[in-house]
Image (tube, rainbow, N blue to C red):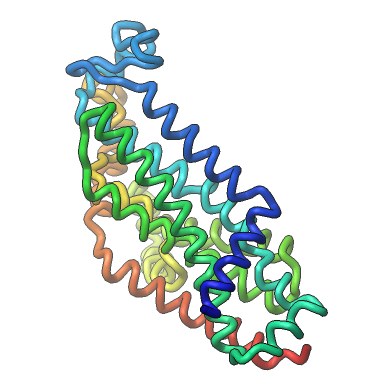
Length: 314
């Protein structure tokens, strides 16, 4: 009962700030945009046939084939909502949960109830996860049904994006909570979390720079240090690749037709091939290692935040 009371409090907090409805509208708009895209054989059409693959705009897409186009669209949708837009909005909706709870007048009421501080902290943390899970379910189920009924592509693995979206949020939210319990400012927590998220992504993607541009591999020690360092922070950059693999999407290089590849300069072709190989390796990554090491980092951060919360005098 205590847990669900805190879940309801988290929802009221997000509803007051209208973020819940903003995310719901975004999910509906994405689903509607996907519904406007249709396939007839290898032809692609928009707005129910108003524009088709016979126009110059879609000549490139029509040469890829229906399966590859669908895969790329899935990849694009995942990057959109698993990327900066969706998680940033959810982070804005939840970053103030702990600072608001620790304000004078509110924390005394909560601490006066028969619940320990560690349990209160964990319940609040999990309440934010429940809020994100609901948004993930709405978005993924809506887009899954559109792909099935409109595109005639049923990809059960796409439903695994629900826990992946919650995971990605948790990787960033733990930083927000740690900052929030120290400075008690939602704005600062959001800014620091976004900076850390960008740093996590760059660190994780850094080894790919050495693979795509082999001329920098002569810096052996730097290359090795970057690879080791890339396993320390949460693997936020891995989540879209895991989601794309389980949803059956292709790589971004698949958008380049074979004719363009053949007509491109030799150096450009080599670089695109290395990019494809690197993305394919990312798609084959070990989910257990990626998620396990990320959750270990998150657990350490959450424990530090809980320690600060339980030892603070209110």
